[in-house]
Image 1 (cartoon, rainbow, N blue to C red):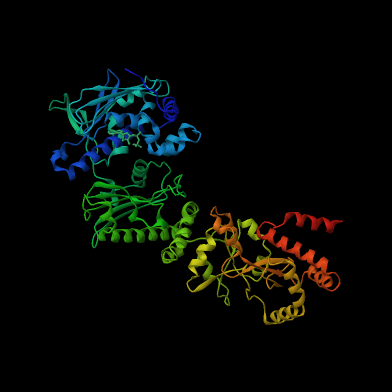
Image 2: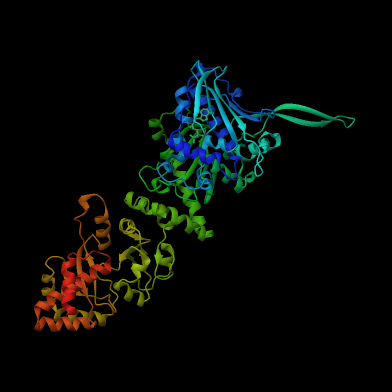
Length: 626
Ligand code: ADP
């Protein structure tokens, strides 16, 4: 018989399992039971649509058996089984062990990290077993196969005999070491409690021979062995909330969604009325590795009266809540409804609407009652809200606007829009914001100084999508959003306005000259009403702001490269430079041209834009120095 090698990545993972120092090796049992339960689910589901299969639901079960002498623990199921090819594909390579997939190309971290974070499915058996044998017969096949491996030397597959459909997995436990007593997995009590701990909700009975000690009338010990069911079989979402602890919810989450980071919160809702369903939703404690990529698939598991009919039902979640994991179980849905029909199902739409509302409500509650936790959540998933608003062209605004947070000039930490509005100055109509790549960069922007000085709060928009979202929203509770970089802020007193108007008029010709000196790079040069100590800044006119220009030009699609903001160079009349410029306008226009170019380049740099002609810029500075 030929011994086959494991695929390279599998081998690395296996080596890691074999030598694992992971402290929760016991999870191997949970992994095996969960695989067994999935396999039974698959068979049962098939039988629901094909009555000729003659499957009797009451006989579907998972069996545990120990042989102390042989040091073996056996987990059997009468599920769908595996064909020879499936054996090869599923157990010969790690690539199918979902959670592990993406780690393939990356370097493997230490085992605790990987096992802890992702679980590792079938291969976790090698943490406790020195040899693993899988005997399986697929539904619809008359041949059975035996897979065998000691982990190190590869594996063998050969034909074998097996009466019934299903899979039997035999673990030969490792020899005890000083640190680890593998014997414990032969103990009835240990197995009973592991099943209770990790697999209680499994829908099929997990059975085992259990020895009970009774005492007869004379007080004599009587041993009796019965074939017991170890799990309560009620799915957790069918239980009442009062009998469940946070631990119950969290361990179900870990088990079901292979995420070992505890969820931020869970939502357990039971609904009767226009739609009858139980839902158990979770907000994860970390973003899945592919969350912000196009590979990520949103969706909830969908059950019809306890039977899973779809692994990821995308229609149950709006994009802005795509991070939510969980399941919905409804008796309103037909078992063999097709994907296409499901999309148009009225019940499903009602459920989805309800869920959206409960997710929003729970997040609102979290924000109110546990702000730190909300902030933690927001840091991980908040970006999705802004994408949601933008991509829905504002349709999601009502749902999301009160969940948004932005850094603010007042607090140095994120605030909500409601908080901002509640402390707006009496005369203030607009919500001021400013964009930049970081809070530190923003705080250096010249145009911020005066607004802050006058006591206005300014929101700091630091993510690429922020300004797009705000533009789509237009306003919050009738207060329009206003970028402090755009045009006039109307912060001056009437007197000041009068003065600005006068100075502008007096210097009209110089501004015109400067605009021309910049040869189309700016639309205008004018006096600024928002500068305090800095000589210049840039603002934009029209619908494209400077921040948008930056974002768009950083995008890979070429068509956006030419989208430019209509820039205006604003000058501070109370800065000494301004006097200098005026002098030059009368005496040395060539020098004024040079100074204009320099000031424009400075303004670009301050805004975080690239200087258009760095060589010219450098030469101009050199001229100044010599
Ligand atoms: P995962 O469960 O994450 O897919 P595993 O390594 O645990 O990864 O299992 C790999 C695959 O092997 C499973 O997806 C399933 O197709 C198959 N498998 C494992 N155990 C069984 C079983 N008891 N019956 C049928 N198929 C199984």
